[in-house]
Image (cartoon, rainbow, N blue to C red; front, side):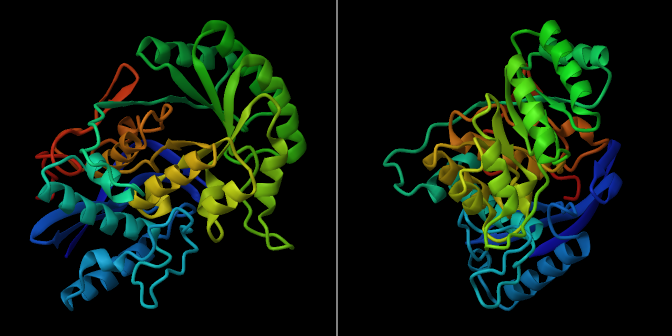
Amino acid sequence: MNVEPFALALAGPLGTARGELTEREGFVVRLSVGGTTGIGEATPLPGWTEPLAECEAALSRTADAVTDGADPSTLLGSGDAASSSTGDSGVLGADPLAGAPAARHAVASAVTDARARAADEPLSRRLSRETSADPPAAAPPIVESVPVNATVGDGAPVETAEAVAAAVERGFETVKLKVGARPVPADIERVAAVRERSPDVTLRADANGAWAPDEATRALEALAEYDVAYVEQPLPADSTGEDGTRRDMRAHAALRGRGVGIALDESLTVGANPVAAALDADAADVLVLKPMALGGPDRALAAAHAARAAGVEPVVTTTIDGALARATAVHVAAAIREVPACGLATADRLERDLLDADPAPVTDGRVAVPDGPGVAGTIRWHGT
């Protein structure tokens, strides 16, 4: 097993709960399964995954285990959708990847990539086979592309409306607006300007946990007038509950039924079994699934299946990862089938990338699903 570090400069600063980032650091993992080499990416993002040093330590432990003769696929612990991310203690007593979702993402991705390459099939098809409760007799159909949304940041009403209109002109049918940096009435003014300028676009809003419950209630009731599909993470994530249940899950559940859907994102990265907690609490209409934060493409796809079984819609996004992880997320979205627009149009957030060419380019509001074997076919990684 080979682990090689990388650093990718961002095209612009990325704001996080722990300050601004100007680059994305991580590791490319290569390992052999049954004589075939697979490749995976670990790009940790503190607040969503383990920190970089912990990611490196988990990968080092895994490499040591592989050197001692362990099959990499046996070191992955649970692939269950209910597994937590940063809080997962693992189901194997000596799980080297426990509590390290980004590290597990790289190893799980590399294992699945190797298996897909050995079978000469795209990663999405291999994922479909490995996560299906009833494996199909015939090969799953190839999905050529997946719809994606554009994202528009905070700005004045006219500026926001112009940015959305420009995205529509580029072929995007769904646009996500960042909200929560301004008072609720100011954000409503922005949404109204967007809707007047682009009456047919599907609108989503992302509050990144900025609102208190009363603010969220006012915002949802006002946003319903402008046909906003859903608000992502209106309330902060919180894993604490006096009675053993998640307070943020209960609070989000209380917001549902106001004419605008509720999507959970940050809430799926804290506490034990966050996907199961969200579904058990009826806390969301949509789950925003980040394979890097959930611990791998297998866990993300299992979470999507669990959501669909509960009548909740899955949407796949990235944590502004490199091309390997971004393409892996595209394969996850393709394996879900008929997925809504996903947050996968993030290549332009990087000044440079890991691969010689983008394996999953975006055109007219859709991202191409790589159709070669494994995650990216024959496209070369810069490090090889």
